[in-house]
Length: 241
Image (cartoon, rainbow, N blue to C red):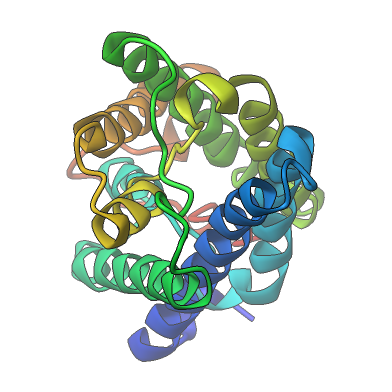
């Protein structure tokens, strides 16, 4: 089933549920790890983020395209592979899904202070550069695996989940490896930890946008058509093929 044929409300519901699942499982793993004295471990947290994205891509990818990330949605739009009319509804759905997940976690674990916020372990500039590069690599993978052969589209969920898990595993201890403004905004708002939020509301967008010219340099020009040209018929999401 082509996700473009789904009514807007269904797409938005899918984005809401997928982003809710991402934040609930991912930041929930951080909370449970803290409360159990490291029972999940850093590696377990990274795997949780990667696996929940993998599962949600296959669950609702054919409905909404499985973005679950405002930086990803905005990059698809800038790349000419996502309609402007859906930009605001997607961003709103993703934000509400993330906020709902953090609110539920706060209800379940009211004594936890941060609810899995992304907080830099070192200087802000260090985490800013890390988040920019991590999101660049993530978006570069997304753009490339959502373009081309049918077989590539079928396995795209594995590639996207793997890169998220990999990046969270090696960089999560320093910058949090958010790569997703909604994932960082929701727990920060609910827990009140806003002091470093600017990093996670700017670097992921910049990193995702920088992946567009990089993809154009590797793929056929029709992959990410310049502004004003029509978008290709395929490749709007990790699960669009």
